[in-house]
Length: 98
Image (cartoon, rainbow, N blue to C red; front, side):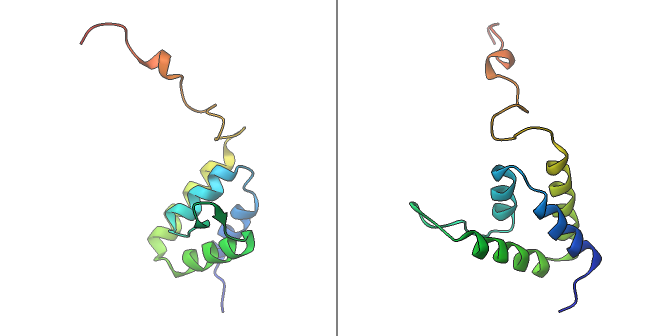
């Protein structure tokens, strides 16, 4: 199987993932299940292999979009899972009557 340049970039970016939320997000976008059922996770290697297979099978437009999403997510400093990139809901709710 021939691996194209953008596919190599995707593999490289997946290797740079530090936040599990990003990994689960990529799996969800590619419709790769991470759990066998509610209480039993799949093996990491199986999920990773399915992610690569789904990415390589996707159309070029989706591959390009997903690579951009992954690059942007990897550029974020800190963890996306601790809520550091969202504003506190108390700050966004207005006390004025509508």
